[in-house]
Length: 198
Image (tube, rainbow, N blue to C red; front, side, top):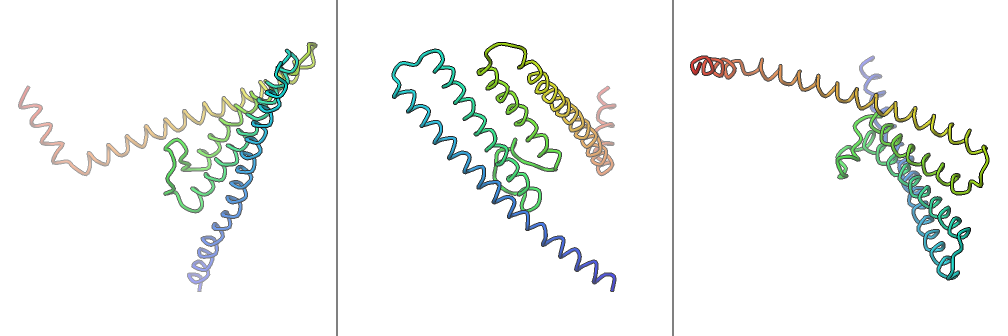
């Protein structure tokens, strides 16, 4: 009886992971919508600049701010796409054909990729405020808070990279040890040849 209950629960949990498809589709649709909106904003901004003909320094500053906001839109669309892709790989099918750097093998991988994009987004947001800045000290607390968040996220990425390298190092050691134990004959032959040459 207990085995039957366990089997049923396993089937339920296995089927429930497919509900992630809804989240993946919503994330991809949201990212696609942001990409379209960003493209529309790009063409609108360029068209507005061409219609003006002459662009003053103030208008050039506003034009730069518009393009910075467009970059922020595209980065947010990238975050949505990476999140949707990562959830699909983790819960549905990991054999999807994407570049190697986009492959997500664990939640930590997904968090690392998202953190990298978020750091860039924060830098872009601060750049937008810096463009609008007209002097004064009000930008200092804002810049310090963003710098603190970026520093924390960068530290997190650094620690994650160290942990990944150490895991890979120990995994390679274990594989080498298994191979040595699996092929004792070849190891003995190598040692005998080595000693015979010396």
